[in-house]
Length: 262
Image (cartoon, rainbow, N blue to C red; front, side, top):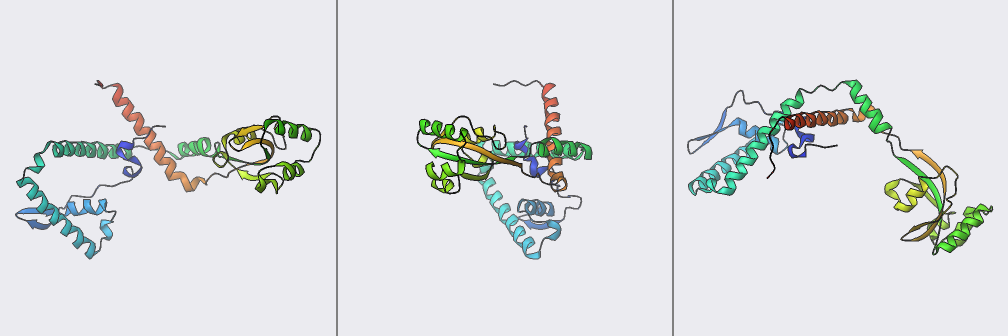
């Protein structure tokens, strides 16, 4: 799935722009007014809820804006604001802000109904809930040793007893070869691939090689990891679905645009 990371949608979708309806002047520096809207923007950048801003926070941010204005004036005197680097950067930042803010307005108009969220949950969360496996193994140094063990086990030998006697993995061997519960992320790939292909209680017919040696494996049990409750991730799913709709919107724009890569 593609995501519009360039616009940081995960945070932008739920962002709200500050209201500039009544833009009061906070301070005047060398004849230049610093409006309250700038303070609101700086507050957002510093993750401060402007509606809950404290007098000390407001004072600190206002002083920062005054310092910024003084530096801007000095930069202009030295024509620093006219350098190619500054000009290009300002252009990029301005265009990104306009595009991302416009995209927010589009996102706010996207309607995702409960049924669609529920379908996504069932298809992508519940149906794809990870499985865990409980298995035992006997680790030996050579393939021939492993083949001999498999033959013994097929003839009725006790797996736990052989693990305690033969396994070079002393930790699991002392527990009858028990590896405990594990998922794909917890186990070396060759072992996981073997175990995930076995039925409950089934002995692997061939040994598996890893960087540790040769493994003789028996699969004891499986269980599904319980997915999160629908209510707990409903809003996260909604964000994903909104992103999908926005990607579709941009793809439509691309199909009607004349784009030349150079």
